[in-house]
Image (cartoon, rainbow over all chains, first blue to last red; front, side):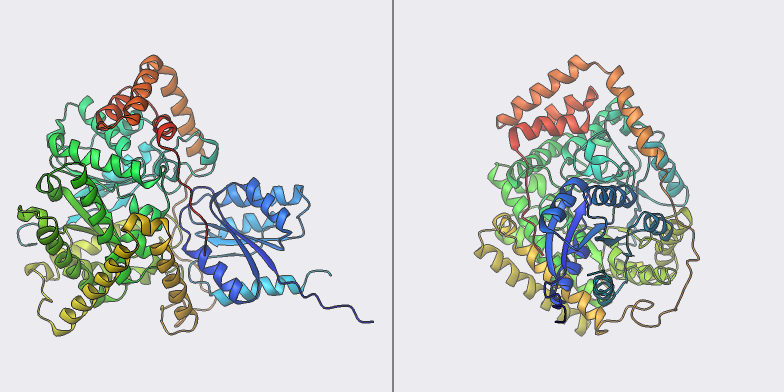
Length: 139
Length: 483
């Protein structure tokens, strides 16, 4: 008997950590992911890293996406990644976007954070990235 | 208009510690800037102190941290506050940032009547777009009305509010939505002040506006023209303003941050020049031009100098300022202006049907309209129905960044927290506690809160202590997340 293909949609948590109120990008991306067939839980603004990871655990999310345009990306991505690893979600994808200089993207990449998107990146590129990551996961 | 007086060249600036921002102010003034504009960091915008646990990582990042009067003293050290006008982009805690500003002027012996500037103080667009609030709408509206009444008497040259479309547009709205929601917010402030018993001609001349200058050149000019027509009509016909100064829609313009690209960032100089020109042709009273590197970081000195010089080129070389409303009478611009007025009027009708702008906000109406427009804009780029040069057309593959970027030192947060602890140790803590208790009591009553806020500021109560005292009476606002 051949293995069943997985039918559950990719589940994504989208959140705005910290105090940054710029939610245009987070909402646009959330909607694009839904239109691409993913299930999205949008937590909204002013989320603590603890609340974000708790939601990821409760929802058994495949992907956590953070949006940070406030310059506080190093603090927030680092903390969310640490908590994900601590709570057994180290195999899930942490990705996101904002105004994040290349140098900081490298720093975060070395900590296990996935690709980070910025102004001008195409929505389809974000969708493709998540789908490609999901397809390459061990079953 | 500009033959008598050019627009004020006012670059929004703030980063790191008050000393660093003070240095940037002096740099800009030395380069020929004619007014100041303060950018506060995120914790300050929420009314929180730098040592609040949720301020971690945010102190001094996208603006300057101001915790107490001591920071205000450092921020404006050596700046002639009676000769340079100062704009402060602050909303939720605007009233107590303003009283810190006043307390500093008082200490320096500058009379309140000599102070000129603008407080953004526009909370309704926070619920709609920028999302930095503290209380539910009603107590915020009370504080705004209190400030209008206080300033009309004591700080008569101060613009008490800058009713802002900028953030609405940055959140993804169309030009028509920016126009409609901004003016609808303006009507709400006027109506609240009238209900509180203020006379329209006492406060209306100090109301000011703030619009975005986006990429569509003629549409932006038409939007600014339409705003003036709608405002003047409403003020005269609906609110019965008699003083012609009450009819004026005076506004600041900032070029569109969201139009800037991280790709080929030097092109942002050209985009900003075109947008700035639309602001000038649209008749702005002051102007901020964005820097080429702002899709990547806070601006470097080099980038901000080019941005300021762009305004100077328009002002002194182009000849554009020689005539008022030079596009008046153009069949195209007139038609666009009428069309935008009509679209705005249709939105006003929808908002009235929902019970006014505050109930409309509570029902998420403007927020949902903007979110939909933002998605459509992004899809238009994705499908190349809209072209953004360097992004979805004329792309340089594998381009390398060739401009320097400003970095904020991580030590800023530590330094700011150390300074705050020192202020708390040396101030009169008994006087602070007494002033906060008096404020809380006043908040539970109906009197004007500005004198109480000024008392707290004078004795170095922190921004966060004042917020906490008011939250105990007013409660906090929560938004239902949606996308």
